[in-house]
Length: 291
View 1 (spheres, rainbow, N blue to C red):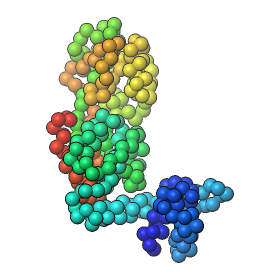
View 2: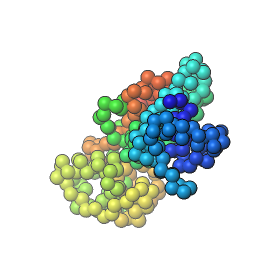
View 3: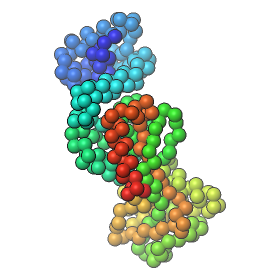
View 4: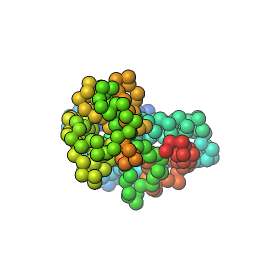
């Protein structure tokens, strides 16, 4: 089984068509089709279901896809190591993140240290970033929740308190901080289920036996800010993600009982990769300033 055939299979799986895959690899479509068919015939399996102009992965193809991605990533790492003699003169890193705040900070510092390495950023929710990491679609993941799994290696990057923000006419607006108990029976704007900020605040409220009124559930920080600016309720956000607005006032919770965290992840089996190691080294140097 040749690497070229696996690359052909992977390209078709990723692009969803033989013609697009052929263009990506710089091959003619008949050549690429022949490579995929040869792989199928060699092992007497069907990797794709052909339905007119549409193709879908077969069950065998679905099982092969993550392995092919892993092999492609290892092939790239081997090439970078041999071609550049370990000097990081060339390469590409794909970084996924749930929020732009810290990943931009990391990538900016990394590009200054290693200007010849290309870095691409992909944003998504925690489930999407974890799946992309495990499927080798990205090399590194920046997540706001700790995931304890043996196949993942992490760096604790930053920790920030959850703060409130209210309309300038709200009774809390004239105070620097309020106790957690002050939220009892107050109209609270909350993020969607699964939000790290929501989970952190709900945990401390539940432990303290405090029950706010949920004024509205909102799926984005921008919409949450607008709702608070209209006086609909009290918003909550990680301090690092608060954007000043003349219509709003930030208010801390006494003792900072709720916090969010940022962690950098990679697959444990890839932690000693030269490229990934170089990114972890840069991020480690930023930890003190980010925390």
